[in-house]
Image 1: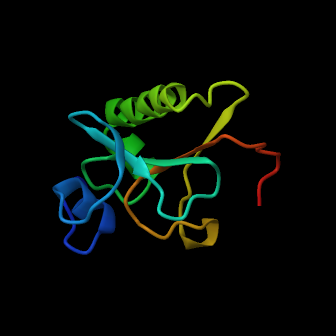
Image 2: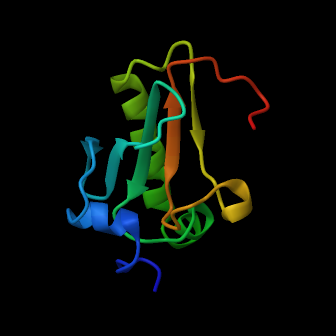
Length: 119
């Protein structure tokens, strides 16, 4: 069920403290931690503490939480000193787009050139 922790979800286990992560920021509703396979000098995953399979389902069910997640990503970008020259926030949705953990999450990427289009 959306919103409820999923026993087989890696990110739910991180939220519960059952799997370690290098947390860089946490609020009552959001946790952010370093990606274990970084694709840029700054690569932080920003996730809601509640489980939704992707960003669209999170935004549909809890738009205020989706907004908080984006706000926190911006705060982390400032904390990581990636506001200048710029950073990217990416939501992968579905296996064809590279989503491997089906818990809504944003990738905050910065600290190197981020040419467009990606991939």
